[in-house]
Length: 315
Image (cartoon, rainbow, N blue to C red; front, top):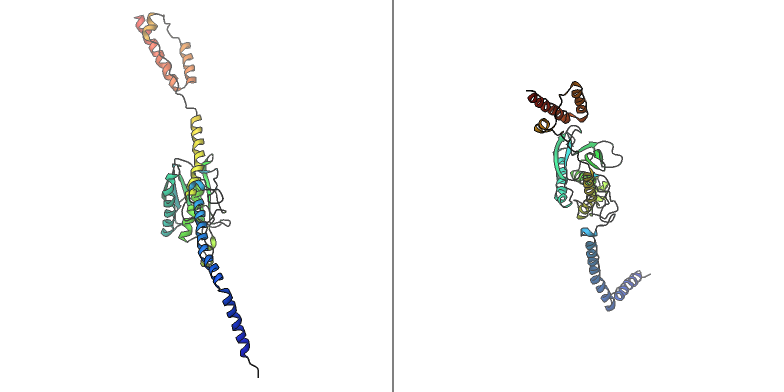
């Protein structure tokens, strides 16, 4: 009869010996040091990361800040966000209002001089100083896109933001409008930027699907960051300077000089004045037609003065 308990005893002895050798006094001290040092290292790394990304002076393109593009909204102007009539529910309109509020809170720090407002609904594209938000069925693999309608060089005062028709989640709508308004203020996409560093990062489409709990964390920041504001300010600094230069180089239109009317006393006393003939009057009318309306009026007044002086002389 074989003894089946001996292998089990050998297995227990083997594991107990491993445990005794592991938890000796020296090994225990090493494990204790590891558990004490590891939290300190993690906190030091997080502090270094926060110190690099928190101030606006540390903003770096394609790391924690977007690059700037040439086209942007007209500085020192009004921007109204209009919605196409019937495209959005009251809950979705409230999401857009929240997006506008987030940009309104930081725009005064950017130096753009833009007055951002929430407008009403509109049936067509007939508006000025506005961005029209509307739905579109085919979006070529994207959720939203900005399209310019009226430009003045690299500056524009009218645009359209198309949003995919099947996007209904209010959180996603708020993020999309926040992102597209960033394009309107001259910011480029920044998919290489770290999470929560800019509103110009990509929106994870899987984070808003049926299995959103399985999707990775969204990368786009919930509101415009300090680096976003710094990049908007940098882009508009050049735009405002160019606009001021164009205004300074524009030649003002000089008013037409009036034809000086000679003094009546001087004409009568010192120089004998001949009575104007028909040829003289026709010649005066010819020159007046070349000089414009204001010159015509001056020539006619001069003729009347001369004729009045002759009439008094003949008396």
